[in-house]
Length: 244
Image 1 (cartoon, rainbow, N blue to C red):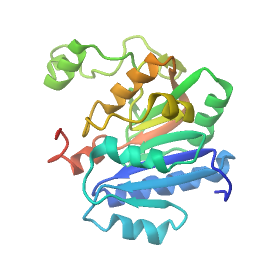
Image 2: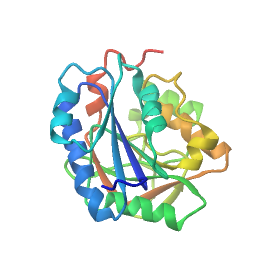
Image 3: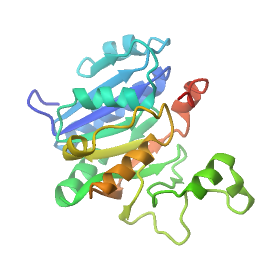
């Protein structure tokens, strides 16, 4: 951590995921110093009822905590974090993720080495260490319909895995999962933040589409690895997830 302007702002939105959020912040803090970057951690709480903020304040005094008066949804809460962030890079990170060592350094190094890149995302892993496919072309209307109805299961188990792709190699991608999505400050300044019309789901897809329209390239960076406890966040907000 540094008292000066941060290189990287990590923004974590939480809603009744106290223990997952603690593990998430702990992993970020552990990776911050070895990354060689000045890192600030911003946690935006959507009016949790599980003592999330009290626990975080006690365990992580260096983290900046923002308390929303109600559950504003994923997009609005992340936008509050983006507005408060001072980093040249802005990293949206789900509360149900845990960075593996070296992730922050790998993501920042990639962006520093690729000035044409507007955004990047890490390789996502399941808790057992297996691949959780991420980074793909922007979806079509048909693919979204297949995803929502789960009709794709008639002929394939995983909608996100691309046949023949080597997920151990970097790739230019149209969509980056909002579970772990790093952008340049120029993206926020030119494209704006997440669309608040999305309460939860597809706000990351919309943001990536808008980035592409402005000429910002998205990239998959497998040198950085993040464990994603799939739907750990959305289960906590299940009753509110699809509210307009």
